[in-house]
Length: 246
Image 1 (cartoon, rainbow, N blue to C red):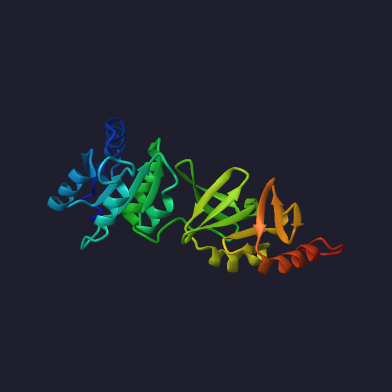
Image 2 (image 1 turned 90 degrees about the vertical axis):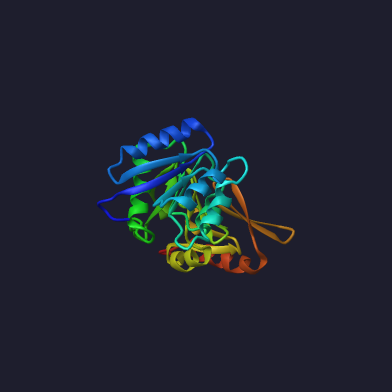
């Protein structure tokens, strides 16, 4: 896309009010030169085969071919268009990013959040806002915001991504759990299970019952695998030993 020409965007949603709203908001963006709409993935596929489209915004839950299925088809194009999912449901985020989606926007869509999605399309992959070691960029309520690593209680593996659990809720991070384990160990995060990291400062209690070990974090009981039990106990004992600086 040339910066002077602007984007030609195809919006796909089976619900007409959502289609009209997205079309209206996109037309207000100076980076967008044209908006086409379609209420079915099958019809949209015909448009994509006949016309040059710079980006696609699509819903996930649609009759017939779903948004995820359409994105799989588009990924096989010689030059796949950038895809932004616009949906009311957050449970498909991992699948969406596995398909190299540029963004995942939750409904209802605000003008600012849509403008951020357009920015990501224009700039291309790998240009997300930088984050420090202590500040993590996450999606919350359809917006990108930063949370403090100190607020993360535990981390759960979700495919090739990680879900951060805080007092506010959970947030998907496009980073594998193994990477976080290595990068966050010095900050007090330890593996207690093949799919779980916990923040030692947030561990309130460790329990053993019939050889089964668990930890309590904010009222949540999390299982500790047998192979990680001894290391976790040692770390907690050292952490709470009088005179310990950790």
